[in-house]
Image 1 (tube, rainbow, N blue to C red):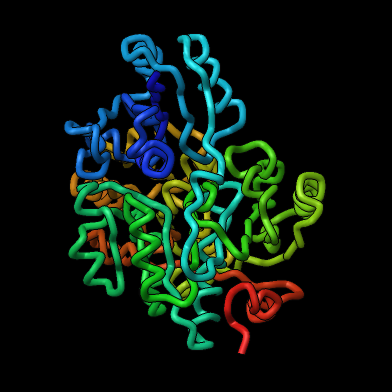
Image 2 (tube, rainbow, N blue to C red):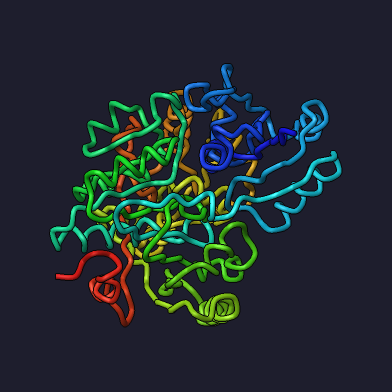
Length: 448
């Protein structure tokens, strides 16, 4: 008998699970994907993908695989006679996962989550993976620092980024970015720029895409070491030789309450407690205690997240509109981000509440996430959303925009307001990135 499978996803891990665990099998057929609300902001609002294309789905799927809203889960299970529902997206509470399981089971299907045996691809070169227990812990700060250190040693390094497949899936099967012009030509979203730009500024080549067997193979062809820069709190798609997982004491306790962040933590070689300069000591201690309870073999590293701005004098005494990283604020549950830290640190007179001034999709986002504290998520998944973001900024009439997103917001929005960029870096406490690599030189092929 052929197992009939439905994959619950959010345009990322779900496609990877299909590619690695189900594509080409005669004994299993994926009859549908579902798309989660509130993940990959703007994707469903702008229509999203209606179908995983046949060019990627492979033989046996001449029309591809339909993608339906997650709200239709029960109906799909019954109508498609689904045997197994596979949960396949990240940064959700354990309770949320089991609510999904209860829905699937009550509708008559089995419920499962794919593990690393099928999901992690083996690369032909050594791999360093940087992941987290929640989105917004500071993974990119750490991956950039590691890539810088490798680059300083003359080690050819390719950064492999978890998928954000917003455009044409076939065209984006494998994507390689080396210059800002590459990003412009690809028409990437703001969220993608947040993850790619600072790597590119430092001379790091970035790979991403949809079919990660091809992505990782291409990246390994030109690199001595792959650096997996994970998204959200997702498990790595490639088997690591060194696995660093970040924890955030500003959300203490989350490290054991979210999927698959806890699994990441249990698999980690190192647990890096970041942002300690902004956290309470009791919260740092709680994170350390939780790490020790679930993964006593992991070495615990401590670090600060240090914020800087390009023009501190302009911030001092100004009424500012703070724009922050979108996913960190929304499904990441953070009420503020690095822009807010910079506003306080560099003496802004006030942070303007964007909600009364918001329009269109930006207004919808602010209404959907009432926990936000006078910050504006960086929405930009289409030209229409960028226009809404621009209009909201203009309506708020700040003296300046304090952009706490990792990318250069001024390259994307056209507003009659100065945009001051906030940067942040990880500052190790009692250890160094060079020493971390030296300790694993043999496994990473760095020995001389």
